[in-house]
Image 1 (spheres, rainbow, N blue to C red):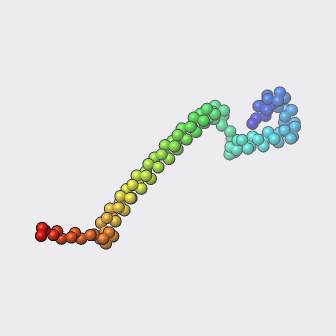
Image 2 (image 1 turned 180 degrees about the horizontal axis):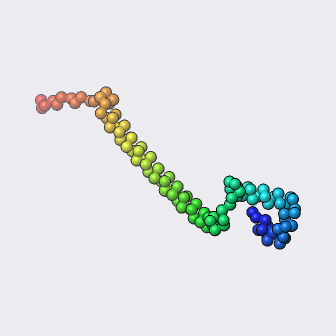
Image 3 (image 1 turned 60 degrees about the vertical axis):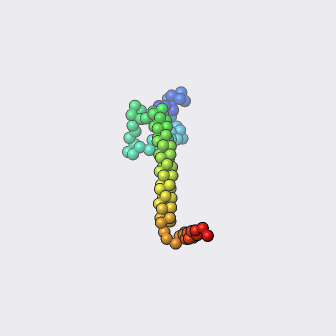
Length: 110
């Protein structure tokens, strides 16, 4: 927010704005809130990112976030399968977990 921009929009002079304490304080407060650059230094307009550029960056980051979420889901599912297979292999190999039925002797013809 600049005095020049407010003066143009309100069709008044900058000197008139500077002489209105309430308007001057409001403009300065809005400027501080909008551009809290350290030391009062602001980037020139040509060095600031445009709204279109910022929107595109947001879209790219949102898509990358979706890709990473899908990848994480796939990794979790693959891990669950592997851990399940390991668990099954360790249970099957333990003696006594499942009683083994002894085969009956085969009786021949009488």
